[in-house]
Image 1: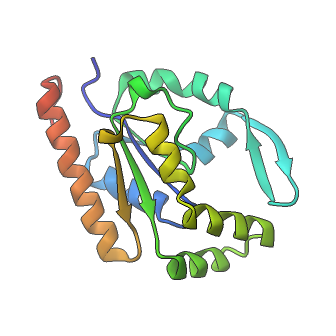
Image 2 (image 1 turned 90 degrees about the horizontal axis):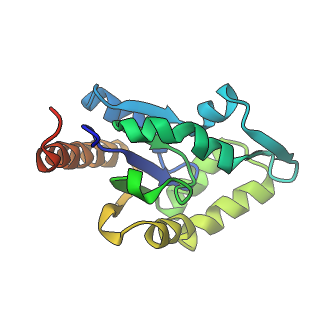
Length: 177
């Protein structure tokens, strides 16, 4: 049995996944931050390139095969915009970050995304694609939706997640805080 939970921090690009993940590791130093984008580069998991969106495609099967031993160990904070590929039995909390369309528009514009990628990401947020994927892929009781519009949201969200993790450890009676 794992001593620490596995948490996915997901959401449309620009919702604050990396900022939340980095802050959570500061609050919970026994947890390990897993940037899937870094994982993809480190393990050469690229499976082509989408020119129109200027995005790397990923071999998700290889990714899951590589990350599963880490998830079995526990204590991982996974940062990626895709959540539904990770084994449900190894995930304890899925946090779907959301942002107001105005805030997200500004963040994505600052990233200078190609028009197609920009529009796809805005549409994804408006249509709640990632939230729906999470709810369809995991027990709805472990999926939470949090808004990430400013630094106050970031801090309160991370404190809430930290509190949840501490309770998970107590409930599972296998680890320490």
